[in-house]
Figure 1 (cartoon, helix red, strand yellow):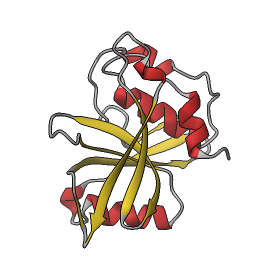
Figure 2: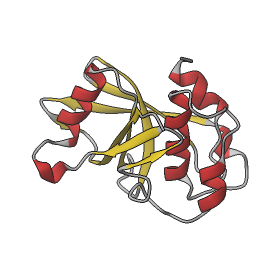
Figure 3: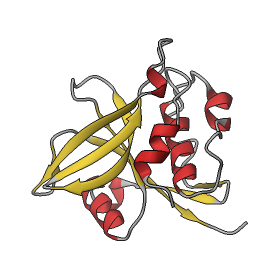
Length: 159
């Protein structure tokens, strides 16, 4: 499997509001289930702000997309740490650093109490969607410095 950074660098977010389809495409690419030029989901939804619910708990291209439900008693952060220990590629949505809106990220690792996150910029017409964006999320004592709003991961399932 290619390093996650290499997969993200080669990907693009094609539309301003195609964060969720872009994130699912990245998960599919990380699992080696689609080619690097796969943009079917972004082209289908374009600027519809569809969120993750239309993708969650269903199979796409051989990958079953699991959405964590915090109401079942396990926090996003606890589940995230569990999934990373199990070797899963994990994606999350968290509140932006400025406190306005959310964005989707792939977790590229944990070092020194920080989650390292990778994503693509929202395309505004100037090539932002081709740029890899990095962020970190402080995770200490079971809390994070920004609220995680969604957590997804995939498992490969035969057709």
